[in-house]
Image (cartoon, rainbow, N blue to C red; front, side, top):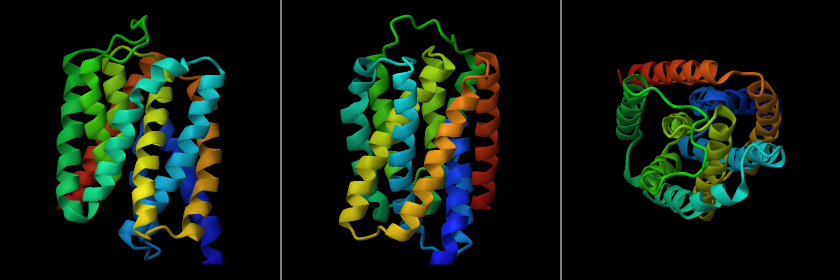
Length: 245
């Protein structure tokens, strides 16, 4: 177990780095951890703990830098937490293959919307999330609690579509990830699925990756961000379809 600390730290770093910038970090971390023979549910539980810590750390940096107002983000709380807890509750009832199919469908729909209706980045002057989006955020939270890979990308697609800037999109996404992962982690902890050696090693790398990604994100233009997220979405869809075959 001690020999796994360094590899898990590195996995956590790159998972968080990619996940913060454009989502899809789980598709790096999960296969890598499975190579070490770690059970799927243990991996998911460790990822929820790691994402809870790292996503809050990156959100806090953006909040401190006044890239987002706390009162706007607080409205997400009940939908994201309840979604994560609901997803974790049903995790053992839905097999991984079905969840992969659902993820592919959701990502294809999100990608389609991006090309059919160009996002109006930065034009949402009120900086508020429309009420009609909350059920969708709950649904993404459920998916995150059950499985997770592609969750951040889905969130970013939603926020882009509502007209938020790249940094605000990251801030809302990281806060929602923090909430849904926290809700799911509580359920996994209660089920005794958390291996603290794995979870803590992964979390340490994730925190460093999250902080590095925020510094990189501040140098990326909005138009570039859209294509980065689109590109990651296409790669995720391809990887998920490949895993189904």
